[in-house]
Amino acid sequence: MKVLEVDLGERSYPIYIGAGILGRDDLIAQHIKGISTVTVSNTTVAPLYLKNIHALISAFKNTDIILPDGEQYKTPETLDLIYTQMLEARCDRKTTLLALGGGVVGDVSGFAAASYQRGINFIQIPTTLLAMVDSSVGGKTGVNHPLGKNMIGAFHQPQCVIIDTETLNTLDDRQLSAGIAEIIKYGYINDLAFIDWLDENMDKLLKRDPEALAYAIHRSCKHKADIVAADEKEAGQRALLNLGHTFGHAIETGMGYGNWLHGEAISAGMVMAAELSQKHGWVSESEVAGIRTLLKKANLPVEPPAEISAEKFSKLMSIDKKVQDGVLHLVLMKSLGESIISSDFDKTALQQVLARA
Image (cartoon, rainbow, N blue to C red; front, side, top):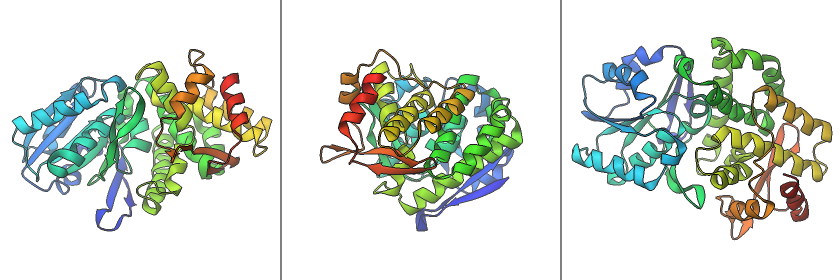
């Protein structure tokens, strides 16, 4: 097992990464503050791993809340369902919420923890690759709105993150590739050597080689932990983690939540960000081609859906958390492996990218 620390002063917490660590009750018990817990999972994950959690928390009074599975259920209505069941179970301020599942479970459960009785403790137990390397770390929680993804939420850090890599054995291939999209993102933000490693080891990741997966997860979490420690609430540097996300969120919203997986949308979004960067002369045509090749190698889409017009893309991108004082900020590539946040991009070039897409 490896342990990373997210250094946030009194809100610091560990990320545990290892195979079979859901069998270790010493990890989870030390982070439960009161006598009661509530475990939130979904209809896919609960039959697989809820019994493991029950064995770890048998000393606590626990309530299970099982959500439907899918991005389309990351809504205020699902959040209200969690509130209702917690109130019915008489959960109080010392209750610890356990989020067992992928990014949707972690995001909506984390927001419930952030807002229930003005904030209770929670623990992230991600079971998808994307949640392990991205959404479970950093304290971003929230729900979607029909007009925009993740527009309603709060920053609320977990007590710890427990990443059992063996849970990836039950993850379907499409979800695995979606998680690899977020891993690739870290390389293009600021770690070109990681891109070389991913290119050489992509087959191992797709075949779920335990050592390759553990290495990629650890390196990705280290990148995110460092960035979150420097900029917890996204006042500056943390926005770099949104490479491809403004385009990707527009795809998810425009196509209807759940039709494109988050990682799939981010993959196409990274290519669009690279193309816009190329139009500014920051990356070459061959480098953009290399990005496409690596993403295709991970079985990810590199073109956005034809159903979204340039006009609709523009409208969807205008409703985004990266819009400040009416100005859109995008994460672009200043060079391969060096990303920047810019509002001073060529608006005509952006329209050309959207029109080509």
